[in-house]
Every structure is written in structure tokens, then in C-alpha cells.
Image (cartoon, rainbow over all chains, first blue to last red; front, top):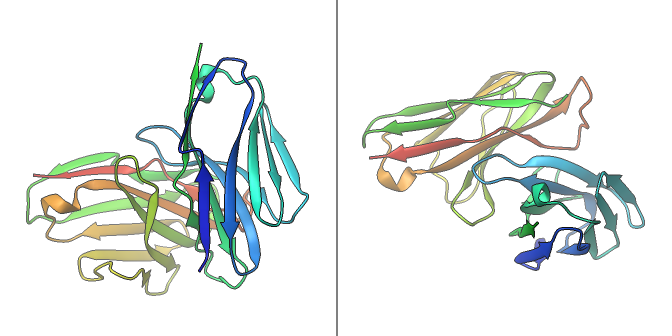
Length: 112
Length: 119
């Protein structure tokens, strides 16, 4: 069964304290792995798409990496405005409909 | 690019009434749209997938007659909650994927969500 597990469930950081969020997945042929950011009361905001092991993408303080079993979202020198829930989702290779399987999310809190 | 809007952003209705939520892709053609439901502190739960001009495909356990989905054009999908009851109160989010503008065809772009409260 296709599955996505994110850890930790919640993460509290001091401003400037770098860390990583984990997304482990089991899927029948990965078509794509997606990272989203969701602020309270809003829809998810697209961050990155990763397609194959070894791929990396960066955006400001965020960097996403991918292996055959997991993805990491590295946050360098975070600021309070990075506080949000970060969602990881995968699309299986045999899924032509584009359906995503979501993890439960990591709630990040960055204190000044 | 890749802007998806939803209307209304919040709605309060009486039990037994129907509520329609609109989802629009503003700067690209949405060949596929998805409707999700999200409970507090939980992840997104897919309700249905709709392709333009076709009937929606509902996930197991989602009542087709209660949650009517229409995807009549490449920029608009609607979700109608029929005979709403308090247990239908939730945060409803749509997403779209497609082509045009600066979008990636594989990526789902989400709307801002609609909060429904049924009294």
C-alpha cells in the first residue's frame, strides 16, 4: 500500500537554528514527490517537486532533497515567518489521474 | 502564475440547505481539479477528482449525491453540498493541475479554501 510518513509531527526552533524535516514514502513507482507549506486557515502553497533520487531544489532558506525512500526539507537559519505546517505528498507512477498521497504534516514553529 | 481562487472563503448556512463552492484557475487551464476536506490538525482528505467535461470520480466513502461536483470548463469547478448538516462543517479546499502559463503539468495548485459552518 502506498504510504507517506512525516516526522517529526511538530518542531520548535529558535530563529537561526537550522534543521530538517523528514518525509518517508513507500509507493509503487514514484512519479513525483511534492512539498507544500500550509498556513493556518489557508490552502497549501506549492514549494517543490522532486522526480528522481539525487535531485535537489532550493528556494530561499529551504532546500529539498530526495532519495529512493525519503525526502528531506532542510531549513537554514529559519525566521519566524517560516512557521507553518509543511506537507509532503507523493504521486504513484501508475496513477494517471494525478492523485496525491499526503503525509500528516510537520508543524514548524520558529521563535524569535 | 498558477493562481487558484475559491469562492466564498467562508459560509454559514442552516441545516438542510445546499451550499455551492466555486473553484477557478485564473491563469492556466485546469484539465483536472480535485476537492479535499480538511479537519482541524489533520492532513487533507481527497473527496473527488474531476476532469473537464467528465463525471467526477469519488473516493471511497464519499457520498456522490451529497457532494455534487461539476467541472464544466477548463477554468471552473463547483462543489455543491446538498442538504447540509452540522457534520458537514469543515474546511473545503480545491486544487487544479493543467497547462498554460508557468504551471508544471504534474503539480497540483491549491485554492485558499472555504470554511463551511452548518448550524
